[in-house]
Amino acid sequence: MLHQAKAELDRGDIPEALLHYGKLIKRGKNLEEIIRDLSESLYRYPVEVNIWQALGDAYMRANRLKEALDAYNKAEELIR
Image 1 (tube, rainbow, N blue to C red):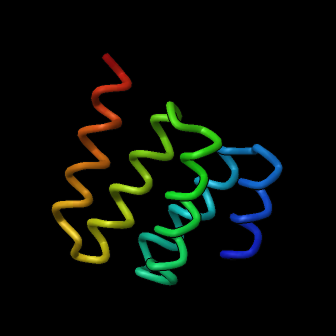
Image 2 (cartoon, rainbow, N blue to C red):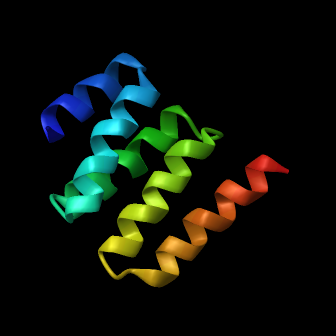
Image 3 (tube, helix red, strand yellow):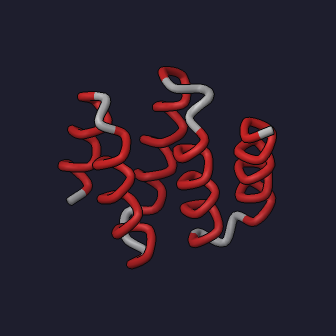
């Protein structure tokens, strides 16, 4: 599923990619790889709120609370 999520993200199908990443995040699977993928995708899509939120979710699931809050705050800034 991680490979599929990354392929969707590479194609620019953000909603589909985040659907797959979200399932993995909920299961606590491949969190460091997901964090890396989502962080790298922000170079291509820096104002994509949903990526910032998914990144926050991944950080939170990985017990990296400071980074989770930073990602959520960035998502909130972009909404305003």
